[in-house]
Length: 321
Image (cartoon, rainbow, N blue to C red; front, side, top):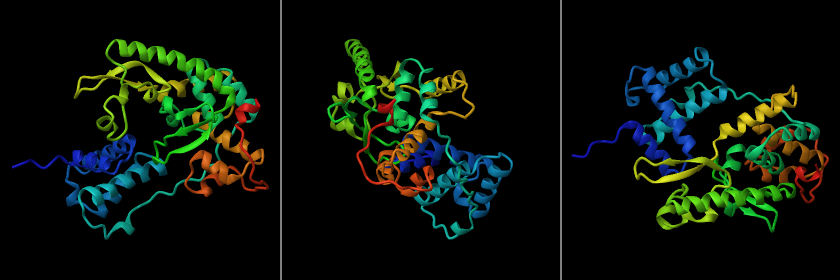
């Protein structure tokens, strides 16, 4: 008789079956494991609302986690009961939900953006240009592939790792020359990898089965590859992942300190500044919403309370520097 897969493996399988992102899978498995350990390794099928509320209260009161973190844990547990255990949730209305705080985003002036960008060197500098010049999230920039750039149309396709909703945004002209030079270097690394029997990257969903040679093709390569290859334990094959987020985060933090910034500057601050500067220049909020990839315009509205703007063509704020 075949053994029933372990609970956490069932969670992973259910997440992948719904094509959720790897980060969602990692987060859901983490919180389900924490929930089980908190209750002395009891099986979730023997627990209900009281145990879920007890765990969530523990996170908020004793662990002092933020509201979004507590809600992420709740989402993981709801997914566990709905999608994995298949148990009805008549007690869902009784669950404790943290209120998400509404915070005003930190926004830099154009001069402040310039002063920070001037302090960043190397590949992180080019990544930061795209964060501000195109309004990308950090992971969106790092997961760009060569085929996503269209220099003729001055645009790029963004594969959203959060919601898997692709969108288009502008490719700033002031970053094109640097991108061309950078891609020449990346092409050299890729060619060298191929000569050594490597040169493959991770492909989404079932593409590796459908297009077995695509993983080694130039157009599928990361624009910002990692400096080292990694080995897949199952197959023994070596791949090159994209640049790690911490490399850019540390560079931005050091640049902000070097520029004497009092504001708390992160990679996401460039995205906030991109949206705000476009709205200040009179671009339509619906257009900005599409460029940012927001599902609801109310999310974009946080950048302004009074709009006296009309629809017009959009030009990257980076091109005005």
